[in-house]
Image 1 (cartoon, rainbow, N blue to C red):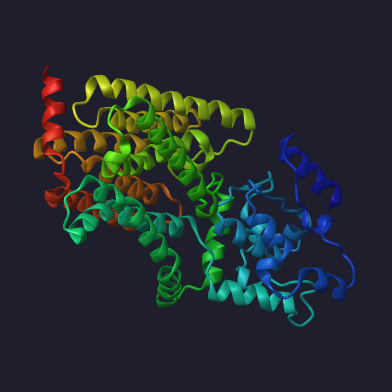
Image 2 (image 1 turned 90 degrees about the vertical axis):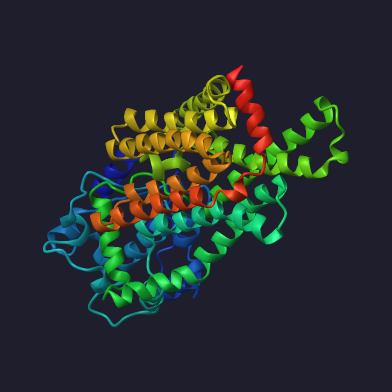
Length: 447
């Protein structure tokens, strides 16, 4: 058992990776000594802290023959259930060694994780088991589908934030429009981190599902290699996007001081609008800075650092090339729209290289929708529509490619997404903030 474990582990580890192996990293002493190092707070357990840390890149599951032969499977051990629960909720890639069928994971016939135990299964339930069970039962694990739905609602709030900000302020200023994006993001985060987890748990209970059913589903998806890419890790990815936006904002301020003839202090609203607009450029730069962060839309996870740097550089080149071509081809918001399509094309190429055809199809659909939005924008004179449409389209496509959802659910969210994009177009009065600017751009394009 030990020999096979180390053979499997070493075979599936990369040279640059450092592994945390629980039974080697935690002191295996008496029950009292083990309890003393674990404590009574499950969020402070070493397992939890390691999986939630920024440096933890993936969970490598190493099943063994013994648990398969006794018919129980690896996840008859409740500690293993807790580790994959945290990994799934944190959005980590979940990789399984070659012993990856359900016999090795849930036994034959498959058992539910609700039957799992800590320690000797012939002894009464211990304190560790009580802590783990209480958490799984009251805070259901986060499946890929649930994380995609959370992102969708965040993107929905971001897309509608500018319109609500302009309506509430009753001031048709560009700065109020761009201010709506960060305010919408704040509202979305409050929504998905406040009432939504509780509502999701109650929804499961109404359907007769509990935390163990969700966990069983996650394990089955992992066995199908459906969770091998990294999901959006809001704890770490949001600061990265914010940092990229901040750097772009600083660049805008420096450019204004050095190259703009008008003193930015004399027109603070215009400067604030440019700074807030730079947040969008920071979002477009994020795939180049964290190529694995776009896993929910590409289905790709790159383990080797050189591959991450190379593909990140390729994504940056796609962004710059798209910006240049957009400046030559488009008539409205030229460079920004070109950069957006360049990033989408770069993501499509990445998925194609790794034969992630479901993700390729979704990205191609996204590109076609954004091209259609461009022509609708020209027809109806709503030049800001493309930003909000892109955010919504990204949220919907994340749900469509997420594993675990039924065809009926995917069709439902696809229809909802198209209706919401149509609603953005229908409510177009508030986004006609700079009709004169658009007219100037159109006349320049005609010339």
